Image 1: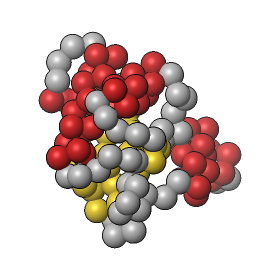
Image 2: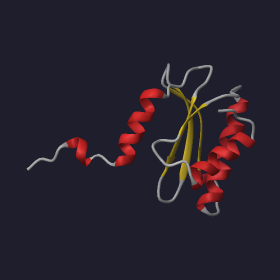
Image 3: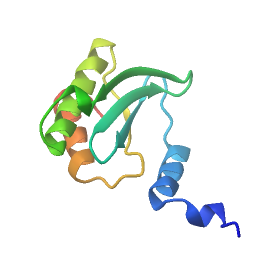
Image 4: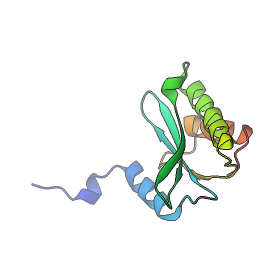
Length: 116
């Protein structure tokens, strides 16, 4: 017996789809997309108009706890973005709640000079 695909989607996937319908990155204000797994967090700055990743950072590059990794990823993604001339982004939390690692990444990116 087949299950209905909508009911078998995870709530995070549904939230992410809803968020992505409203958030679009442009060349002037690209999208800062966050992804977190059980072990790492990663961030990408994406220009959706052409479909290119402008800058990225991953938690594997840094050691420490998950929260410290997220803060380092936020700082590094902001540094790499400013090297490419990007100062303002649209934040895409990827359906995750804005707490803990996602908040640490966003706060450290703001402190490093990104505005969103």
